[in-house]
Image (cartoon, rainbow, N blue to C red; front, side):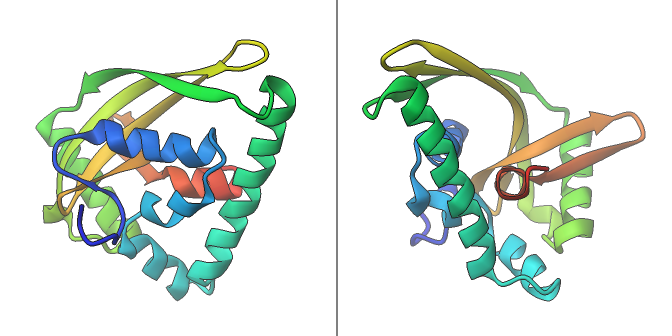
Length: 169
């Protein structure tokens, strides 16, 4: 890893998806800070929201989700992911970098790879269940992060899944 500063180094973007699922679906609040790079926290700080308050908001959502899943699938439920990846062109990776640079001040040269993913979330518990996520993963400065990614002819929309989780979009 990179000294606990968040993200997942190396080529294994699946670890980043599992990390997001740890918070979103498995109720683990300890991973929240790892779901976004420092640039995200700085961005919110500059816009009048402290890192702590953003994490608290996310923690509330994680806790509420977890209570719902426990009620539905039992206290000992587990979650497995089935991930289908789609390649993203080099041109679109560049456009993603430009979007993240404009929004968060991330150095666009540090955005080096991305995939579009379809994730099937399978719940195992007192009854079976399923959810689905269409997300992206982006490699920023050597670490992978989950992003809400939409690629259009006229531009790219990209924000961190953490924000979607904390603020509901």
